[in-house]
Each structure stands twice: as C-alpha cells, then as structure tokens.
Image (cartoon, rainbow, N blue to C red; front, side, top):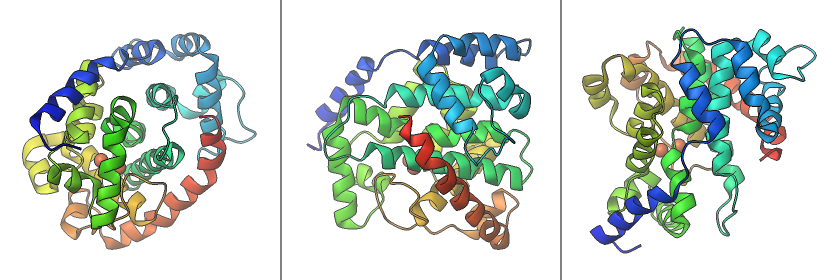
Amino acid sequence: MPDTGQNYDSIIKKLGEIPTLPLVAAKVNSLLNDPKSNSQEIAEIIKQDQALTTKVLKLINSPYYSIPGGVTDVQRACAFLGYNTLAQIILGLSIFSLFAENPVVNFNLKEFWKHALAVAIGAETIAKKISYPRPEECFTAGLLHDLGKAAMYAISPDDLIDISKTAERDKETFFDTEIKMNGVRHTILGGLLAQRWRLPLVLSTAIRTHHIHYYERVKMLGDLARPVTIVSVANMIAHNNRLGFGGDSKPRIIEDSELAVLGMGKNGLQAVIPVICKGVESSAREFLRSF
Ligand SMILES: [Fe+2]
Ligand SMILES: [Fe+2]
C-alpha cells in the first residue's frame, strides 16, 4: 500500500460506494430510538427479509442463548429475549450481512466474522458480570466494533490483506500497523460509516474509539467509556484466546487499571474467559454456516 495521502483520500472517497444502511437495519435503528415501539412492529419489519430471519433464528437458537426447546419465529424469540435484545441482534446482523457477499481470495472472512461474534459474546458476558444495565447493546457494539475492517474488505481488500500480512510478519497489531503504514485506520473508516448510517451513539463511539488508551477514553467519553472499555477488553480476550481472526495474532496485555474502569479484577477476568470461549465455540459453527 503506498503510504501517501492520495491512498487515504481514495479510500475515504470509496466509502461512498458502500450502500446505505440496509432497509431492515434502518427501520430497526429508528425503532431503537423510539420508546413507543413494540415487538409487533419489529416482527413485521423482519418478516420482509427471510434470509435475515434465518440468520437471526440461527443465532438465537444457538446454545449461547439456550432457549428451552428453541424458537421458530421472531415474535416468540422476543418473548424470551426481550424487545431490546432482539432489536440489537437484528440491527447487528443485518449490517453484518451487508458485507457477507463477494468473497475475496486470501482473506478468511468466516474467521473474521468469528472474531466479531467472539467480541460480541465477550462484551455481553462482561457486561452481565459487572451488571452493566444494557448488555444487549454491548453485544451489538462488539459485533460491529471492527466495522471499518469490513468496510475496507468491501472497498479496498488489497489494503486489508496487505496490512494484515505486514502485521503478522512484524508481530504487531493490525492497528499499530495501520498507523505505521500511514493508511486509513479502521476506526476512522468505521466511525465515518457509523456516522453516515446514524447508528446509535454507543455503537459509533465503540467503533471509533475501541483502540484508544483507556486513560484517554475515561477522560474523553464520560459515561460511554464503560461500554467502550467492555468492548476493548472483549476484543483482547478474543485475540488472546484465538477466537477467530481479527487481522493479527499478537497477544494483548490486559492491564489491571483498564479492568478497574469496569470495577473488575484479575479474578473476574479469569472467571469470564472460559464462559466466553464456551459461548463462542458452541455458537459459532452453526451460526456462521448461515453466512
Ligand atoms: Fe479494531
Ligand atoms: Fe477486533
């Protein structure tokens, strides 16, 4: 990848090639912002997209959610999971699906999706552990945190592969390699897309800031520092336990002071890791088959 501003400009320009938010996602997005919306409305919306319904039901029926006997329709799923959880899953998966087409040689998209799913499950598990009031939004923030890499995959796959290969060769993180190569950071790319799609603030903030130092995060983000830190820790857990492939294999050090932002200690971390690994391994295969 040429390390010139020209490459930066052309990638930002190409971002315009990514379609608008999928219709179902756009509708669910607006429902999430409307306190008067209800489960009937959401069932009506998702009915319009059979492929998406299949994906949502696959995930909901995976052992991770462990709904007794399973569910075969969205409205029943809503009764078990609650309106907000279901809406967050639909929003996340419909965006996710947008990038599932057009396989690119030399990039294992399934492993990348598994990384996203691992961060989603990790973030929700941590959120529940620390009694964060909206764990379902942490799930979606985790699922979409690397939206910028998905965008890069769609508009400039050679750059994505180039950065990933260089990171592996230099035993560096994908993010540090992006900086070194003077490319467009995936956090900026994803943040721009989230802004264009008017995603909820917690999602766009997680997408944009999950790699900044937690100390800066706490200073800059106020209440949003907590959910973004949840996503950041879940991301590091996914990397360290090789749950999918997020673009590099460098192990992360999870600092005590970052965990302290969540009111969590090393013991708490050790307790959630096996739960997350089990949740991912029991759900990923069946779920990813639908993509
Ligand atoms: Fe990232
Ligand atoms: Fe990641």
